[in-house]
Image 1: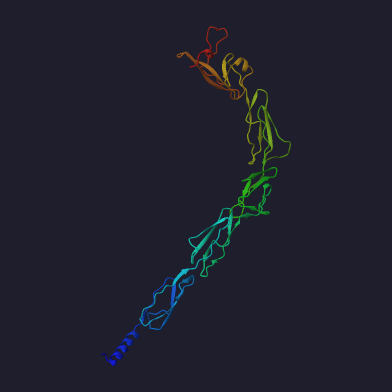
Image 2 (image 1 turned 90 degrees about the horizontal axis):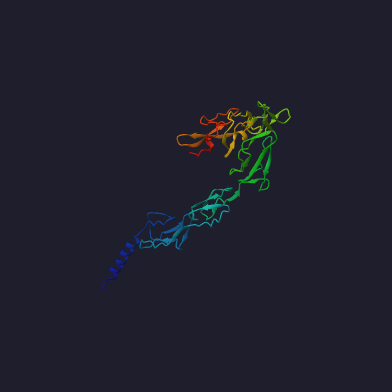
Length: 345
């Protein structure tokens, strides 16, 4: 039989051993803090877990007491990030994100023709709200364009009140006697301004000179301006080399300087030639000579091959060179075959 004294002594020793146990430093939980935080705790001491700002607790037990066993109870607390509300759809733009959880950031961009009215990004805060407030995409507009000196608007249709939207255009034209330097059309840019405006300058041209063997007509006024016109002509037997009508251009010059070229007298009296793709006789088609710039093709013989070929001749300001290979036959030499009647090579 065990002595009562021994039993009391054993109970005392057990109580002393248990009373001497301490709890270790508590486990670390992601995104949570412990108060108070120490390396060890005596039985009966209390700790409290709390989630860091921006995180919410999952699990109801947050307060723990160090037991006599020195072992902390199982902790099921979980701290999860707050979730901000769905950012929605950015009209005329786009929202870029990975998640809506704290502390993530979302960014915003606008489609072409729109600009961000507000911040280009927002962060999910500790309270689960977006900061700063979400922006909007507003249309890019340009105020009415300035009108250059000596110019007027020929086309302009604002679509936003009196303003133009991005990509809108305005077209200018210069007042009479003025030439435009630069593009006549300006465009509303993505920066809310217009592309470079043109410049209108007064332009004068000197009086056109009369060509030799010809004449020129122009407006009967003291000064000739931009876009004024002059017409040229030539005397009989002369041909105008260049356009009949010329215009004063933006650089103060005439668009061309026509001249009068002389006709050609032909030394050949009898020949069949090709003119503009047809066979003609010189004595009929060109009895009054050839005009400057006209071309004909003479027939020549290849005696070795007994065939014919052609060579060209052109009237240039009163002069034409007859091909050396061409041989003119007299009307009395009826027995000789003309080159134009020989089969082609």
